[in-house]
Amino acid sequence: MNNNNFKNIILENIVTLFMKVMVIYSFYLLLRGHNNPGGGFIAGIIASTGFIFFAIIHGTKALQNIIKFQPQLFIASGLSLVFIAAFLPVIISKEILTGLWIQTKIPVWGEFHLGTPLIFDTGVFLVVIGVILTIVISIMEVLKWN
Figure 1 (cartoon, rainbow, N blue to C red):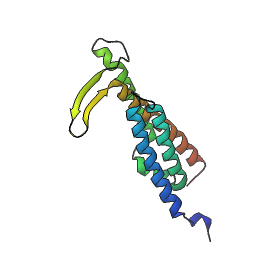
Figure 2: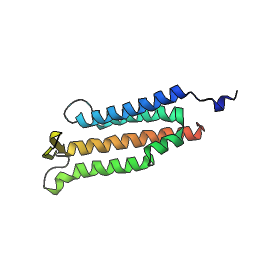
Figure 3: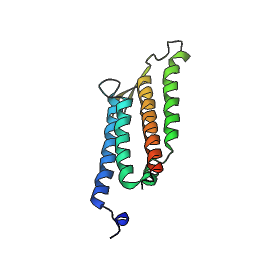
Figure 4: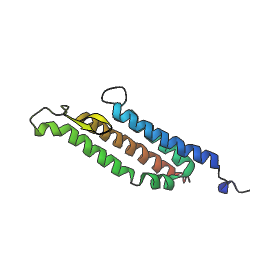
């Protein structure tokens, strides 16, 4: 029996489920981060952990099919969001990184507060995911891990 053709279907399914749970939990931490413990950095690390386990079992090509974009695009998008959140208050004559809030009601959801801290945290979230995935994919490709 050739070990290269051996697949462990149970492990593949568990890792795929684990990745989905980690990504969902990371969104939870991201959304509660500006009021409670959590935020963009830890949420990005948790999401990346799920993606790393997925890449170890399924390979980098399968991971890139899942995330749809190059990790460098996550970095660029995240830095753009951080820049927007930091300088948006300057436009209305406030100090840089001042928190701005919009309060609205969303049907079924209820009252929703959207602010620049969440935009900033989302940017950090994307940067962390992009940097970690760039490093991991590069290492795995150099090692020919597939």
